[in-house]
Length: 244
Ligand code: ADE
Image (cartoon, rainbow, N blue to C red; front, side, top):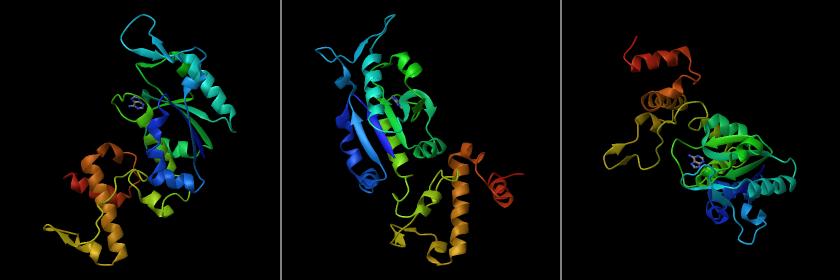
């Protein structure tokens, strides 16, 4: 997969893309990342990329021309031209299903907005999709792009240690992850649950599944509506809720 990032601050990506999972994906050759600056696609002496908002109001707006010209050039650099994703607090809220969908694309072009926003014609005529990473406003799309690339990178085949870890992960099954422990068996008076030390794999799997369900019910009940639960697991939930 190839991801092209269009940003006024390419230097923000140097650290995050050179460490951990993203670096591993790049080294394994399953992810190629290129970063481009729309400022390089301006034609005036001062390389202006923003301007005052028509109609007045505070803050500057990103001009359409450098973004359109940059994205046109970037899309022509490789094939396929790639879906253009604009990062903005007005976009679809990112979740596991959106990540899994984007991870299946051969190529993405990710646009990072800045200042008070981007000229509306960028949404209209350039972006195929708009994504938000949460209901809060960042000072730019860059941290959101790092989040998106990380989430997409770990979905690429061969990036994680074992394929099983992807399937077991929090959210992959619509549930939060079960509690995890490593050595020592007791620390500061807190003991690892007995069943995990038992070596009894079926019992451990049962315990983990139950913990996932109960934890999701307690912390993120909104997720449960879409989780695939057996009738027995639904009964467990009703019991935990004190009904019916
Ligand atoms: N740019 C500014 N805030 C953002 C957010 N919450 N998600 C994506 N891009 C953004």
